[in-house]
Length: 308
Image (cartoon, rainbow, N blue to C red):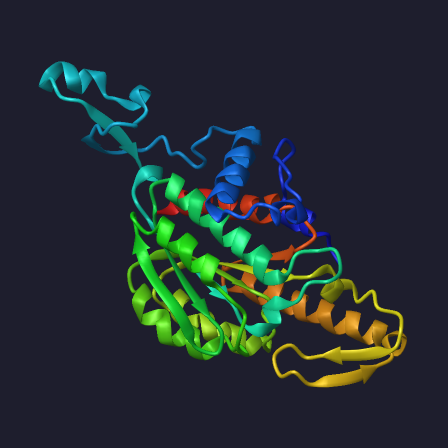
């Protein structure tokens, strides 16, 4: 199986942050700002990733704007301050669709749970979009929609509060909640689905179909614990299904090869199908630093900026 860093194409120079270290930071706002600012400063790129050279329009200067972007020639003619905006600066709707079903509570010994890693990732993506002046929103769901915060320039703090309150309590399902909330995404948006994707591939693709049909730019972050990928267990034990609570006695050695074959086939099927329908797919191992997923997001944003 490919290492997730190879699939993401993470750049040398990025600031790699261990998720177990992040778990000691209690404030999601501080966590997001620390990770994202450090990550972007570590890239061999301009701080405003994806900035286009194609001029779009002027807007009035507001305190805090970079004075290097003031159009001084226009100031000389009008005696007013205007900032040049480029295609990459035009506001975009950005939303996270976050799976908070019970299976997301899993975390192998010594690591963070999938739900915590997903919360860190969502907070970082939200802050990155907010930093680019995009409108930010979030949907949390399990077997139904749990919370919905529409995309707004003023909703980053609300998004963080929603993430703080997210708890994996009920069993999950992608299709019903995602189809239910899709009607709110009729305006073209950048949408990030964060889930462990424990559904049959056909059900997953049916769940996201409305978002593609409505013209949204969709990214999928497939969050798995390293134990779910490698199945390192060797001793006979009882394994519990977090969704149903059912316990099953298993002799791991007899199932090791079959389990790895099945999980690899599942990941390969998702990667292939998502590629065919032009959806960016990233396998996220919760033992890996957040730079994997962040770089995938930034690379996708750069591509969508060029075609917008």
